[in-house]
Length: 311
Image (cartoon, rainbow, N blue to C red; front, top):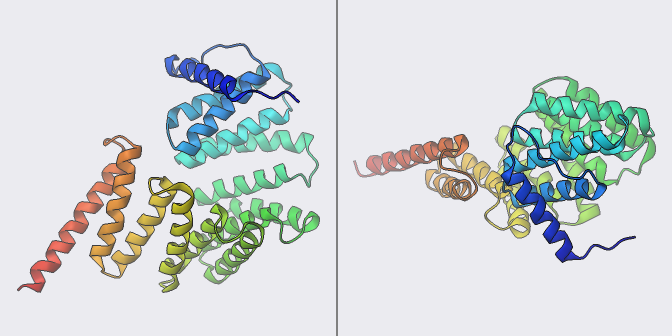
């Protein structure tokens, strides 16, 4: 196995990064189509994704990697399917669900031709498709979730980590269907599996707590705050305080306190969200503008309460 020195990787990544930034985005740049180039494109995209920077570059890097793989390999190749899955997940994260579904279904077509039916790549892809359909409010979400669940039940121990991911998706599907009891059952199953495999301070455990927070907020259960705070503590420990997943927790906490008419606490958490978005995005970002307007609204509610108090 060839070991690539870190300075070599750094130089190669810098080279590819400069090529991406200098590229006319209408036409992807040309470099030698080697396996190493493909790896470097994906690695750089993943580094950008983890650091939450250069969002538009992530798309270009994944597309370029797909383009190179299509040139090198046959149509039914696992690397091409992996590229399609990566692009599908990227477009889901950006809210482009139709585009995401197109790539995820392309990956499924390839995997169905080349993989064993119990392969975990196929299980995870079914779950990704289910999540995409869920976000589109399409009932096909349940169908793909059930396929994934059946494969896992038939081939893996119930404590396998993929059960936790699937139960999270299934819980969210049941929330959208209004079956809150079933959703709670799935979320607790997910939480228990994540704690069994990864412990109390893992990002997947944080996600299970966060989803329970969503459920309990909808059902007006006091346990919403408890679960949001548990999720927040883990995410802050892992990511620090300037991260979008932390902002997600702050926003939900702000929403719970707003519903309780505790506008000062709602303002405190929403202000933290705005500060994170200010550091991550342009002031012209649509979501940033919406958040700023919500913050102004909360300021007005606090002032209104003060005026009432002193009347």
